[in-house]
Length: 463
Ligand SMILES: Nc1nc2c(ncn2[C@@H]2O[C@H](COP(=O)(O)OP(=O)(O)OP(=O)(O)O)[C@@H](O)[C@H]2O)c(=O)[nH]1
Ligand SMILES: [Mg+2]
Image (cartoon, rainbow, N blue to C red):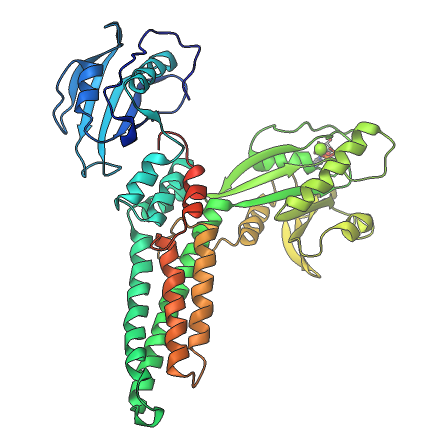
């Protein structure tokens, strides 16, 4: 967005660009102060724009030291202009990068200058959308650009980078090509009566299908792990007052995020902390202790606890070592969603002379810990990773989204259908066609416009 409060006099009445060409501009660097800030422009024939802003003829792919000036000739900044000629640029169009000093006012003035010269402010993700539309990236790669920017752990960044370089897409293409090959083989049989088909042909097709399903299963497992790295797990810490929920949150977060006191009913509002366990983002929510109360504020806190439980992916139900989960927690347990994965945490083992341990109690993992000393915390972290669905796999992980998992699941279903014994060739071929369709939606060969809008709309501006 242009900050209207930034006053300069760079607005000119006669843009040098033909607006219908839709040249877009945005500040590509993060808001705030930085050593360098970049304004990026993408469109057609940007030399005139470069000349107007810098007063120089910039050469393609050369870093040119220039002075950026407003319409009145006043200096905006001194910096570097970089010009990339289509199609050898990020977007596949002509791209001009104006690198100045990374101050908000400087960047805003440079941006306003470009807009005054006929550029339009880019929508979120529009540079990458153009890259996709111009065939520079496929859809899975384009999505990984946003995932890479958003990655909060080295593991998430690494898996997004693998998707960006096209490793994930290549595997999807490999599966699609294999499916096409098999489909051609099957379709070649459609025109012949069943009795004329060599049984060896059928056997060869089944063998190929078996191989295809094996490849698919590996890719689906890798993608699922990628989705875990991206989405992580939201966990609520619940239990009666004073059992040590806030203490556990603080210990897991490695910081005094929540107030801890011996007074029951200390935590009233949610306290959140996001941590990374082996690169998997885990969002912890400490809640108000659940009990009957007449205190108005505490009542609201307790209502919020139940709201948090509804949205959580898992719960840690905390009690004191020496107590039995179930008796005191009966009311809480009765109200919890049946499907919510839950571990029972027996806290304060230091005060009860017990050892850290993990066991199974009925359907639940039971973990003995001390939030005070940290004993047993590795067991809690391990349970959280398992519950998030994290299983480190040897081949590495691709950053994948729910959309990709849905497509891979659809492909798996069609492959399962195709594997039914004695399926007529027409139906076999049709299942393979549907498999192809599902797979190619991942890389964006057949993707509806509204889906594209949704994907790129979630990018940051300038990317
Ligand atoms: N000995 C011992 N004391 C603990 C441990 N964990 C927490 N405590 C103490 O228990 C008291 C309550 O801890 P909190 O973490 O505030 O408990 P809470 O469950 O968040 O309580 P509410 O917010 O009131 O619901 C504090 O005095 C803590 O120091 C532990 O592992 N060992
Ligand atoms: Mg608390």
